[in-house]
Image 1 (cartoon, rainbow, N blue to C red):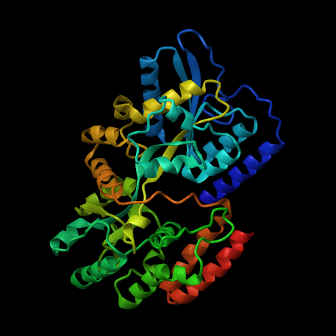
Image 2: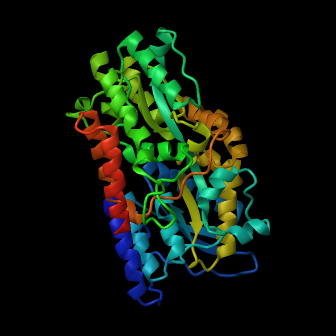
Image 3: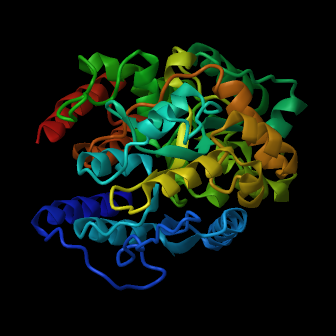
Length: 450
C-alpha cells in the first residue's frame, strides 16, 4: 500500500506543474480533492470559514469534528468545513487539489510526504508565527519539533507522538525472574535473548519483516544515515556498515535463540493477532518479544488478554541507544499556502497543540500530544495502556534520543522489498551476513542512483 500511494502522489504532484494555476470551485463536503479553501469574510469580529482535511477512521472523525466544534464555541465567528477520507483516497484527493492550488486551509500531514509538499511550495512556513508569538511551541521537545522542519522553515507541527518500542511478554519473564532494562545495547539484548531462551524455551523476534525500520535504527546507532541528503546513494561508506544488522539474524539462528522464518510461512507478517508474541501453541512457535511502536501497545495487549499475558515495553536495542532512538511524529498538522486566512489557521494549530480542553476531546487517538505539558495533564484521563505508552514516550525515550532521520526519499521505495528479502535469505541460511550486506550495498546504491 505504501508503494502504491507513493507512486500516486508522485504522479499527481508532477501533474500540477502542467495544470493551470486557476483555482477551481465546487465539490463534496467530504472530499479533500474538491474542497478548496473556503472564501472567508474579514468582518470586524474576526470571522472566518476554514477547511480542514484529515484521514482516519470513524473514531478519529468524530473526535476531530467535536474538537473543531469546541473551537467554534470558544471563538464565535470561526467555523470549519471538516473533510475526511480513508488513507489512500486522502493523498490522491489532496494531490489533485494541490494541482489546482485549491488546498484546504489546514491539512493533516504525514512525515513521509512532508518534504515533497514543501519542495512544491504548498505548505505555509510557520516559523514567523513562532517568532511573533502566535504559535507557542515551548512545550514541544526540540527533537520532535525539528521533525517538522525543512531547511530553515517550520512547515508542520506534530499532533501525535510515538516511538520505537520493544513489546515483550512481561508475565513470562516475571515468572522466571528475568528483568528487562531500557536503553539496552545490542550486546545486552543478545545476552538477554540467550537467557530467555535457556530458561523458558521462547525465542526472539527482532524486527522480522520490518527491515526498513530496524536497519535504519541500526545504521543510526553507528552515527550514520541510511540515505544521503539527496537520496542518490546510501549514507554509509561501505558494505561492512550493513553487516551488524544482518549478523543479528545470522548468529541468532545459528545459536538457536532467534525465531526462524518458517514460523511466518502461514502467517501474515505484521498482523497483531498472528504475531508470535501473542499467537502460538508452544515456545517453539512463539517469541518473547516483538519490535513495534508505542502506539501499538493497546492493540497487542488486547490480543494478549485472551492468554492472560501482560505486555511490557522497552526500547529497541542498539549499539548506541541515544543515537539510534527517536520520537516519531504519528501525524502533523500544517497550514497551506492556499489559505486565505493563514493567521486564523495558525491560531487553530496553536490551540490544538496547547489546549488541554482540545486534547480532552481527542484523547490521544493520534498518539501522545507533542506538548509535554498537555501530555502530562491529560495522562490521568487516558486508558491504562495509553498512559503506559505516554509514560514511555515522555519519560524514557524523550530523555535519551536523537532527532528522527529525514523521511526516506522517493527513490528508496524499491528497496523496501530488498531489505526484507535479504533478511529472509540470511534467516534461511541462503546468504551470510557479509554477502547480504554486500548485495544490499551494491544493488541498493544502483537503485538509488537511478
